[in-house]
Image (cartoon, rainbow, N blue to C red; front, side, top):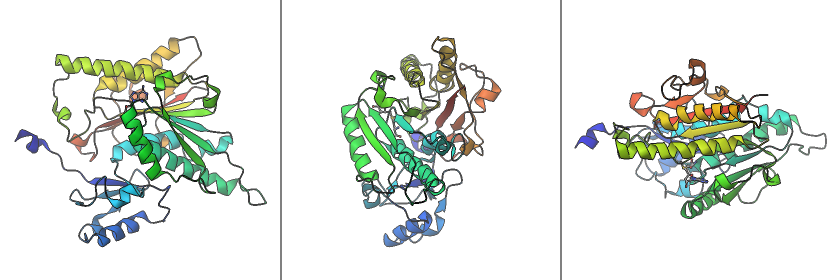
Length: 349
Ligand code: SAM
């Protein structure tokens, strides 16, 4: 049928959960796993992704046993996560370049505002863990003890059923007993992020927020929504407008946390209404407000090599240099990922 004609074939992606799987060569580990499952034909075609560390690319045909219930997913060793969806946590932790968090030597907490099922939360935790790991070496005291601060990630989820899924996934992915190597704690919070009080002392050390809110999902390549050609069909236009309104409120709420100076806002939507337009409005509305909030877009250093950028002009009205800070992914135009949008905002000093 028509759907089948439009079905796009992609590589599969596996993110190695470095919080559990500490072996150095993930590609070798994966090859061994495949050999054990007698998929020798796939093993030679596994390679490391060019943009995301610890992400492996597999041929589209892999694999009959590689699904959300397989042993390696359940024991938290790997996460089946699209490449584009890995850009969000990466941009938040390494957007200003490697090691910038470490320099501050202050407590550095995070909020994941819309967390379930927790793929980005666990990726965030893994990246924080390894970036703190880096300072271990440089800040080791003479007696061998570490001086670096710990980090907490508050992972908000509003929906009860999705909060349960989040908790289950975090149990699989994050070692429960912090040992000497576990410097990051993830605290799931069953609450509406919009009700989180930015002045609550608990969030006083929150310096970075990942906001990946509910969206139309129109970027998910093999979903029927993707083929919704006319967004301005009344019902869809209404739905997208109401999502866009919520996204804007959530982004402005993130910007109101006094000690937060970096935010990643991402969606798996291809619509400007949910992407550039939300970012543009948030930037201009907080600029006009009286609380001194002043934010700007920045191109994440860690994704400098990614060619596809945001849209200038249009309903967002962003300038070319603003749009060039944004990351877009388009699976229908050769990116081999779902459609995705990532923006990285920093508070002006
Ligand atoms: N970041 C997740 C990941 O990568 O695994 C996917 C997040 S999904 C796009 C959006 C989630 O946000 C949904 O689970 C939804 O229930 C939740 N959500 C929506 N509005 C929220 C709010 N106001 N506060 C907290 N969670 C919310």
